Length: 419
Image (cartoon, rainbow, N blue to C red):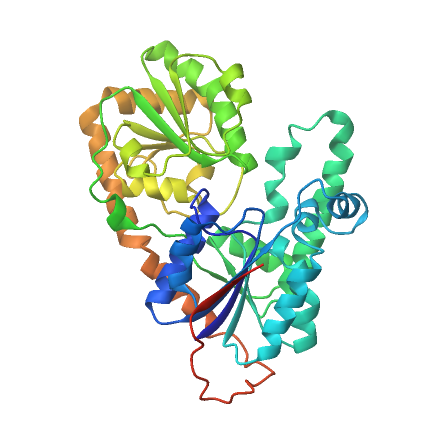
C-alpha cells in the first residue's frame, strides 16, 4: 500500500511509549512492503542518527519544525481558541497544512493515517477539500489525561482546567466523527471513543513489544533494586514517581530499609534530585540500552494512577521477565491477572507490601516474572499489532481522487525532504 503517515513528533530516539509504538509499527510495516511517506511536525531537529534510523524505512521523510511553546501564536490560541491546549500547541501551522495539501494533491494514496486527535487541526481543511478518507490513531482518550496535570494546579486555576477538559472532549468528538476509521490501543478506550464519536465503530491496534530484544534479560531477582522507566513530559509518569516517593517507598523502607529505587527516563525534572534526596534513590535519566538496567532490578514498579491506553514500559518489563508490581491502571489493556502475571495493588500500602513480598521471595518472584514474559510473548508481539492495523485499513472507503499516474503507479525513488 502507498501510505501517507502524519505524526506530531519524530519517532526516534525512542524516549516515550508513543515513539516506541510509532517506530516499531513503521519498521514492521516497511518490512511488509508498504510504501510510506512520513510527514512529521517536530519540536526537535532531524539529526544524523534519526535520519539514519528512519530514512531506510520510508520512501519520503518530510520533517517540518514546530514553533516553541512560548510563541505568541501558541499563547494567543491557547487563551482564546475553541481548541484544547495540546491542540493549539500542535495546530495553526500554515507550512504543515500547505505541505499536507500538496501531498494529497498527488493522489494515489491507499491510506492516509493521522496520529493523535491533538495533531489533527493542520490537516482538517485539506482532508475535507480532497474528500480524503483517513485513519485516526488515538493512543489515549486525551480528554481523560488532564487529571494528572490539573490536579497539581492551584485552586484559582481550576476553572481553566475544567474549561480545557471541556474543550478537549468537544474536540475529540469533532475529530472522531470525521475519521473513516479509528484505532484505539485498548478495548476500554475503544468503547469510550465510540461513545464520543456518536457510535462510530472503533478498532483496536494494541501496543506491542519486540519480544526478541528482551528475551535474554535475566533480572536480578532477590536483589534490593526496584525499577521505573518513563517519559516525564507525560504527566501521569510525573504523578507516578511523586506518589511512589512520597507514599509507597516510605512504607517499603520500613520493611526493607535496603531497598533502592532506580528511576530512568527522558526529560527527568532536575528538581526531583533536590526534593527527594534519599541516597537510596538512583536518578539515571535516559538510558539508551534498557535491557542493561532491567538486568540490575529485582522488580518493576508501575505506580500509575492516570493515563488510559496500555503502557509500553510495562510490556517491556514483562517481556524482560521482570516481576511486576503495579496499580490496575498500570496494566490496563494487557490482560494481566493478579497473582499470575503480576502483583496488583491500588493503594500505597498494597504496593509496598507486594514489593516487599517480591524482594523477599526470589523463587516466587522468578516464577511471576516468567509467567509475565510468556504472557507478553503469546499476545503482544508487534507482528500482531501490524496485522490489526492492516485489518483496519480494509475498512476504508475508496479514495475519491484517483492517482494522476493511474492504477499502475510506479514506486517513488527513495529520498527525503527536510525543512
